[in-house]
Amino acid sequence: MNPQHPEPAPEDPKRILIIEDDPEIARLLQAELGEAGYRVEWAPGGMQGLVKLREDPPHLIVLDLGLPDLDGSEIARRAKQHGDVPIIVLTATDAVERKVQLLLGGADDYLTKPFHPAELLARIQVQLRRGEGGEVRRVGELEIEVESRRVRAGGREVALSPKEFALLELLSSRPGRVFSRDEIARHIWGKPLETESNVVDVHVANLRAKLREAGAYGYLRTVRGVGYALRKPAS
Image 1 (cartoon, rainbow, N blue to C red):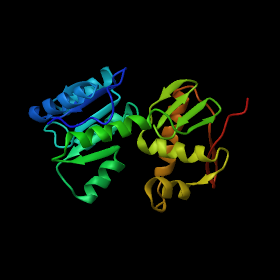
Image 2 (cartoon, helix red, strand yellow; image 1 turned 90 degrees about the vertical axis):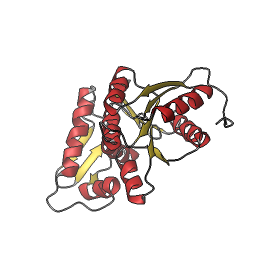
Image 3 (cartoon, rainbow, N blue to C red; image 1 turned 120 degrees about the horizontal axis):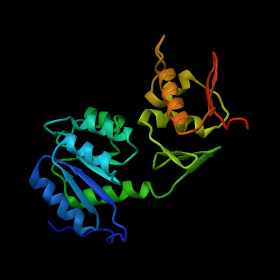
Image 4 (cartoon, rainbow, N blue to C red; image 1 turned 180 degrees about the horizontal axis):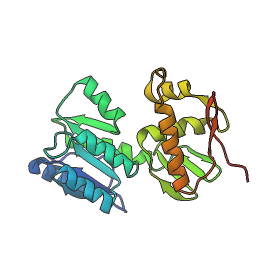
């Protein structure tokens, strides 16, 4: 196949990691993406893909869902723990429920097999463009890039899970405003908080710990009996 590529080859090639156990599909993708100007690496298994991700984080991952050694959903979850690299999943199922699970679990987009390489190229370009600009929120030394879902504290990258980023994104939308636990639950999980559930408190604690580890102290404020707020700490 030789589709017309919608954009010229970039001067500084973006790196794409393909995690795919089918050598024929992998070779096809390597050829198409390489012709489009990307630098491509291939991992034939999930564990090998995670090793490559840790050693040299790519700009984007193309991930086959049906790998023999590790489920693609688990790979997506682990990949997001290392940073918010865009993930496009290749899946053989067209079930709506499965697609929703993929997107909620960390995937940024998906393609159902069989697919045309030109469509994958277009989706890759969309995901990479999202990381090149967009709204940036600043609260003290915190920088939150909304579209690329990247967070920095004093210039230091903070790796958050999708749910932790959703929590920070909500709180940073109105710095200083106290959001109730129920508001947070509805925003992140799309439903009210269950009685006696501590899921919101656990995610707040995890987010606070990661911010502290990056040197950002005192940004998450707890208002007992009310909820949580993000604010610049007092000097």
